[in-house]
Image (cartoon, rainbow, N blue to C red; front, top):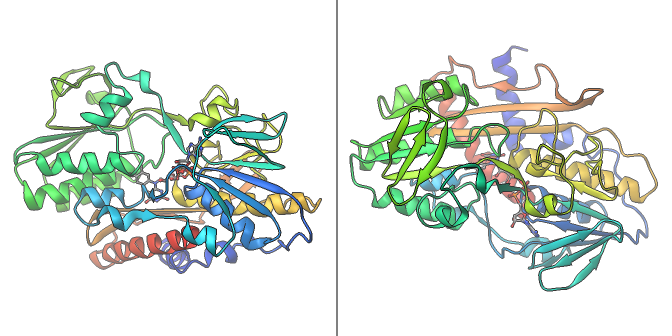
Amino acid sequence: MSQKFSRRDFNKLLVSGVAGSALGIFGAVRPAYAAQNRIVVIGGGFGGASAAKYLRKLDPSLSVTLIEPKATFYTCPFSNWVLGGLKNMEDIAQTYTVLKNRYGVNVIADSASSIDAAKGTVTLKSGKVLNYDRLIVSPGIDFKWNSIEGYSESVSNTKMPHAYEAGPQTALLHKQLLAMNDGGTVLICPPANPFRCPPGPYERASLVAHYLKEKKPKSKIIILDPKDKFSKQGLFKKGWEKLYPGMIEWRSVATGGKISKVDAAAMTVTTDFGVEKGDVINIIPPQQAGKIAVDAGLTDASGWCPVNPITFESTIHPGIHVIGDACIAGAMPKSGFAASSQGKVVAASIIRLCQGKVPAPPSLVNTCYSLIGPGYGVSVAGVYKLTSAGIVEIPGSGGLTPMDADDDHLNEEATFARGWYNNIVQDIWG
Ligand SMILES: Cc1cc2nc3c(=O)[nH]c(=O)nc-3n(C[C@H](O)[C@H](O)[C@H](O)COP(=O)(O)OP(=O)(O)OC[C@H]3O[C@@H](n4cnc5c(N)ncnc54)[C@H](O)[C@@H]3O)c2cc1C
C-alpha cells in the first residue's frame, strides 16, 4: 500500500472507532468470575475515565472507584477551537453521569491528597481513606512554576494564562483575545520537550490566526519557541503561508525564541535577544507529571513516571499503574488518544492480573489531528508495539498528512478531526 492510501484508510478506521479492537487490544480478555478486587482510579480525564469505564465494561464484578474533583471535565482537545471561535465551552464539556449510572463506576467528587503504597491506601482531601488492591494514577500534568522568572500560578490565573488545562484558563485566554484591539500582538510561548500535546501550541497559533484574520486583521502572532523544530512543522508552515500570510512569525531558539523572564505588569517577556511586548501573552510553562504522582514518589529524575510497558505498573511502587501524560511511554506522545489507549490496555492487564494470568503485550494507538483552518486539517498517526527497546512505533503503521495533500484531502482531514472528537468523547464519557 502506498503511504497516502494507508494513511487515509487508517484515519477512517480510527474515526469509525474500530481500530482498537481491530488491533486485538481486547481480544484475549474475559470477565474475572467472582473477582473481589478493589480498583481505585485517580483522575477522570482521558486516561483515568477510559480505564474506569473499560474495567467495568470488561468485568462488571469489579469494584471501581474514580476520584475526580471536577464535576465537569473540559477537554483540551478542541479547546483551541474555542479560542478560534469555532466551538463554545459547552461543546468541550464532559460529565461522569454515564460512567456512574450506566457503568456502575463509583465516582467520588474529591481529590487524592496522598497515596500510601505500602498500606495500599489513598487519602482524599476530605479526609476519607480508601483501600485499594490496584491503583491507577492518571493525573495529567503539573507545571514547573519556578522555571520562568516572574511567572507563577497567580500570574497564569490573571494576566498570562497557559490554557494548557482546559476550563477557566481557556475562558480567560479567549476573553483576552476578544478584548484585544485590532493591530495587537499575541505572544505564544511553548515549552521545551517533552510536554503535553506537541502540536498543541501550533494548532493554537493557527486557530487564533483564523479568529484574528476575520475580526482583527492588522494583528500578529509571534511564537517564541525554545526548540529548533516542532511537531508537523512543514504542514503547519505551509498552512500558515496559505491561510494567514504574514500573520504568524515563528522564532526558534536560534532566533531568540527562548524566554527566561516575564513581567506581568509591563506585559513583556525577556528572551536571549531582548524584550518583547505582547497585548495577549500565552505562556505554556515546562511540565512534569501531575502533583499527586510526584508527591507519591512515582516520578524519576525526569519528573515523569517510569512504568512497565506491558502493564503500565510503576517500576517504583508495585500495585500502582500510571497512565496518560504522567507516564513515560516510550515513543508514544502525550496525547488524549494515547492516554485513552493506555487506559484500555491497563484495564485489560489488571483484569488478567486479577485472574492470576500473565498480561498480554499490548498494541497501542495514537492519532492526533490539528486544525489549521476550519476546512484545513492535518494529522499524525501511529501504532506502537513492545520491543526490547520499550514501546516503539511500528514502521509504516501511520505517518503524517502528505505535504502535497490537495484541498479535498485537507478538508477531509478537518472532517475526520470532528469525527475523531465525537467518537473519543463518546467512547470515554458516553
Ligand atoms: C491545547 C491542547 C490541545 C490538545 N489537543 C489534543 C488532541 O487534539 N488530541 C489528543 O489526543 N490530545 C490532545 N491534547 C492532549 C490531551 O489533552 C492530554 O494528553 C490528555 O488530556 C492526557 O490525559 P490524562 O488522563 O493524562 O490527563 P487529563 O486528561 O488532564 O486528566 C487528568 C485528570 O486528573 C485529575 N486530577 C489531577 N490530580 C488529581 C488528584 N490529586 N486527585 C484526583 N484527580 C486528580 C484532573 O482534575 C484531571 O481531570 C491537547 C492538549 C492541549 C493542552
